[in-house]
Image 1 (tube, rainbow, N blue to C red):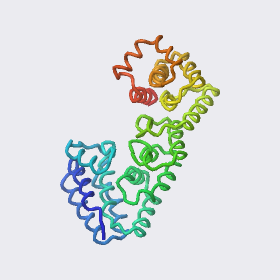
Image 2: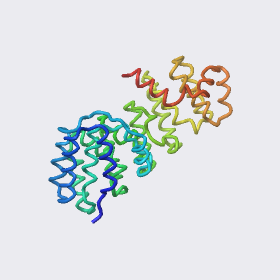
Image 3: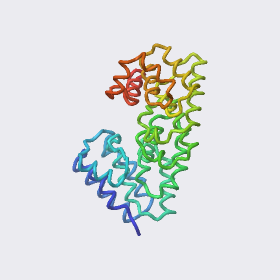
Image 4: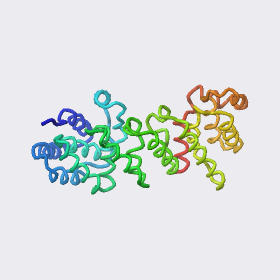
Length: 295
């Protein structure tokens, strides 16, 4: 019977960079139990008890290990995980890959896990087997309004951009806007851009304006590939706010667009344009500043 033994060792190596010998010895033993028995009890017990041995603490990621991780899992950003997440991922990867039994156990973990256990499972989606069958689980997980769980799916995770149909992708991005989560941490946001999402984002902005509320500046990134006369009017309204961060977003959207008539606005803000060209203004810097302000 096939097991994800070799790849699980990558995650043991991650643990070895931040955990003590007692914890490493414990998880080795638990992994062997799960691997040999293949039953739910061994995984459920160790999955819960892992918090006694591993903290929700960051860890150092060596270049060698990071390179190996990326060679096995494209765009997997484990640097955003904590030790407890890595430990729980290691344990899940020790489960034998008998499909029907595997799903029965994993579904129970998803449905009974606490917030931190769900965080670990959703963040680990890209390394779990049977990817296509997990799409509905990921989409269902996005119903939450708890940022810890939502972020595990939506942010720094290659799974949504790889597997989500356009409608579900758009719903996820719109909810990230509604929850004011950092859009720059959504992988392949530009690659998955589409006119329907741009229109939804604009409608959302209009609703916020009508209610006398601000719009998160990263929203304008979504309309950048589709700037036309109509979208230009929205960006002109943003520029009229004289809010520096909002204006940076509008100028960046115009700068990166292909709509020539909008380029006239760049002449009025040469310093911002220069900062864009120097990569001092980017969607990441705008998103980071917005999150810092609202923190």
